[in-house]
Image 1 (cartoon, rainbow, N blue to C red):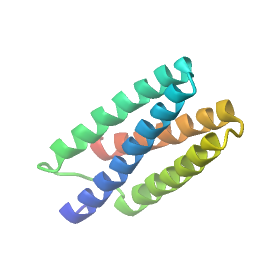
Image 2: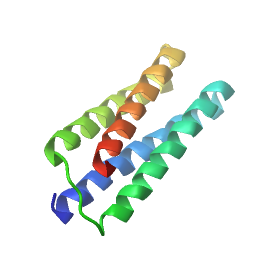
Image 3: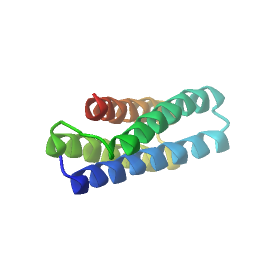
Image 4: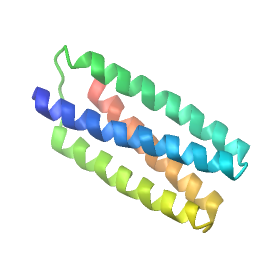
Length: 115
């Protein structure tokens, strides 16, 4: 994987991290403390994975950049949809569960990258 491909994947992981932060703020506003705790744990995991990937920029990476890029992009797109529905107060609890699943998908993709 080229340095350029690594940087693009890190950009996508940053989008996931930022969307997770947005969800946390929304849940805090809605006083959904259990969901905040669950999302905070995912955010911490995502940060660990992203930090590991940043470190690995200086080492040899292996993996399927295109496939992982698509996985992360799709999860980010779906996270955005979940955020939009939550902001509209549509089945908030259900969309938070879905969003957490997409965050978990990004974390799994990051795991593949750092092997």
